[in-house]
Image (cartoon, rainbow, N blue to C red; front, side, top):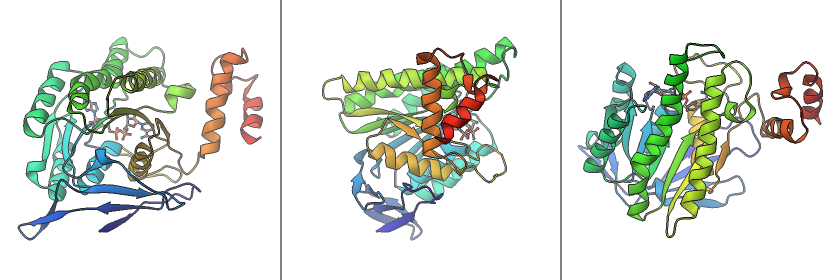
Length: 324
Ligand SMILES: NC(=O)c1ccc[n+]([C@@H]2O[C@H](COP(=O)([O-])OP(=O)(O)OC[C@H]3O[C@@H](n4cnc5c(N)ncnc54)[C@H](O)[C@@H]3O)[C@@H](O)[C@H]2O)c1
């Protein structure tokens, strides 16, 4: 029985530890390949135990955009739980590297990695068919891939279209490709779509990204409603909303969380049955996030100009509100 210490960034309700209960067998005297009976158990600070059968060893986790960042950290974490891992990302050294890393954890035959552009429905469906042929339906679908092309309102229209194709259509197509079989299987399973605080508070600077993330939130809310309204459906939907996280090829800066912190928060909150998984970071607390979200919603109810948080006539009032 192994204990994993979850990196604690100092937030009061950060979860301290995670416990994995594994049945496992040795392969070649080196690797541990978990058996299908393993079940992850998580503890919150008050010591209450929660577990989620969807994250059991032997189950299938499908992750898009897993070559880097939060996707990569989740592939490694899920592999350490003994899950079989299917990765879709664009071809490149990073995809090869993460594939080798995951294989070292869970064994080559438990990993499937494809050069798959999530904006390409034919490629995504071919990936889905390979996953189903090799492993069967997913227990975890993590629609995480992202492009950050297209800066500014007047950026090239092709960048707008590319961003929407990857960041929104990639999520919708991922759901349509994998979720029917997840429901059909009749076992507990989770769809996690990666949103962003930018899809809620809409800060200036990157409108196409904000638009995509707002739409992912909206789509995932509707998906959650649909799943919970479907008779005997054991599939649930969740919206991951990371804070500032050191990902891609960035250098780590103080204030940001590391991807594994986001993944551990995600695991615990999904296992707790939460839909909105708003992650803090080391600069923005949960309280600050709540104030920012409330302020953004109140732009409508208080008849303020949009993005009033960044409006000369309102920004001081927002700062006061944030400190109240
Ligand atoms: N890093 C942050 O601070 C942060 C904050 C809020 C939300 N998020 C969200 O979290 C998720 C993960 O972000 P990250 O920062 O870890 O990303 P990242 O940039 O580190 O990695 C993104 C991955 O997606 C892959 N990808 C890009 N286009 C693709 C395509 N068309 N098809 C398949 N794969 C593709 C990339 O190759 C890369 O491996 C994203 O949805 C992002 O919007 C991140």
